[in-house]
Structures are given as C-alpha cells and as structure tokens.
Amino acid sequence: MERRQTRDEWARHWQYEELPGLDLLRARYVRHSFPRHSHECFTFGAVSGGVEDVSTPDGMIQARPGTVVMINPEVPHAARAGTPEGWTYSTLYPSVDLVADIAGDVTALRGTPAFAETIVEDTHTAELIRGVHQAAEQGNALAADSLLRVAVARLLRRHGTTAAATPAPPAAGARDAALARRLLQERMAEPPSLERLAQELGTSPFALLRGFKAAYGMPPHTWLTNARVRRARQLLDAGSAPADAAVAVGFTDQPHLNRHFTRIVGVTPGAYRKERADRRGGRGAEGARTYKTAGEDPA
Image 1: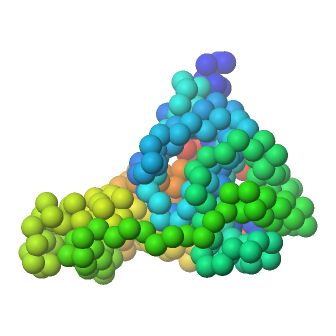
Image 2: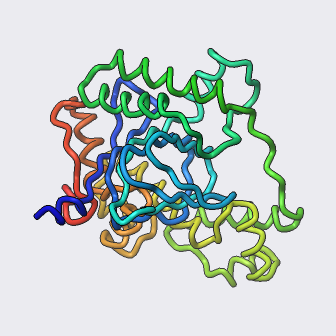
C-alpha cells in the first residue's frame, strides 16, 4: 500500500478567474515525462519535493527544493523525474503581457522582459510561488494577486533583462523555416510530408530540417504536435469536447489527442476541460480537486 502511494501521480492545471493572464499547475509526477515543447507564456516553477531534470537549449539542469526555474516564452524544453521518487512542484504560467505590466511598474527594463538565467537558488520566491497556489485554491483573491506580483517583481529585479534578438540561421534557412511553419499552421489538420513541404519551398528535406530546428529548437513534426496541442487547448477553453478538438487539429482520434496532450500539458484533455467548465460555471476555487495523470479523464 505504501509503495502505491509513493508512486501515485496527480496534477491540477487550472485558471483562477481573479488572476487573468495566468495558468497554474500543481502536480506530482513519477513516471510522467514532458517531451520537448514550448509555451507562449513564461514558466516559473518551484519544486517542493524530489528532483526534476529539465532539458534546455543550454543543457540539463536539476530543479530541487529551494530553486526556481524560469523559462522564457517559446524556449523549447523537456522534463522528467531526476530521482525514482519523482518530483512535486507548483508552476505559474503568466502571460507575456502580465509580466511586461509588472516589469513596467517595478523595474527600469525597456522592451520585452526576459530572464538570462534558467534556474536560481531562491527559497523565498519558491515559497511565494507555492503561496499563490495556496491562496488561489482557498479563493483568497487579494492574497493570490499580491503574492503573484511580489514573486514576479522579485524575479524581474534580481534576474530580469531585456530580450535580445535571437541569432538567425542563414537567410535562406530562416526564410524557409518561417514559410514552413506558416504552411504547417495553415494545414494543421492535413499537413504535407517533409519531402512535399521542401518541394513547395524549393529546398531539400535535410536543409529544411536543419533550418527549422535552428530557428525553433524542434524539428517540424515535433513543432506541429506542440502547435496542435496549443490549438486543442484553445478549443477546450472555448468549450469544445475533446473528441471534436482532436479532429479539428488533425489528431487521428481522441486517444491520440489524449496521449500528446497529457504528455505536453501534464493533465488529460478531459480534466483540463472540466477545470475550464467549472470556472465558466462559477465554481472557481470551490470544490477544487486534482486528477491522476492517467486513467481519470472526466468528459
């Protein structure tokens, strides 16, 4: 019995209506691993137990209790347990606009804010991140909003910088990568093969692979899966059923969506949709529950 409890995985990915522009994830993972993916927003994570191995463009980092992981928007990364016991953490996903607003209030940063470091030792900010979750789950809007702004402001003052222009791959590769991304976005439900895509762009498959990965940190097929999951999230946010979202974004069926969505987002599409439905229905933080990462997918 004790062994089953120590290997149990659970997660809650939700939004608190009093904190617009923010997603929250609180979870314990053991076997679950996140494939390479990226977010449109910032990621601030605080581990409270175990170890999380995070793969970034600059190498592997280990997130332990007392550290804060900071990942800028659109930076590809992956994660898995760094110890057999897994890891437990609380993560904030604030929008670019929210972080920019806070930066404008409390710093002299000009331009798009960013973070030059990926992980820092900062026990106090880690506690603030967990405090945002606790206050939101208790329905304490004043505390949740205050702790959120203090945490982000503290990170910006200590580690914030202005986003620098990303070094571009060779001009032809950058152009082809951007065109390929646009075509994949437009044909998400029925994407062309790599060879067909390269032919349309007047390049070779391997040249397109190299240019795309240099520009976006992922090969085209990995980027497309990530883009499909992002689009599915938007559809679920709007109230679509998981089966309908799966078809709309080009997954073969709902189990196909379930697998990729759960790997990237950390919860099943059904659990994600239920949290949004509860929020729209006014339940908010009341009755909050967590879901096992597999085998429990409320429709």
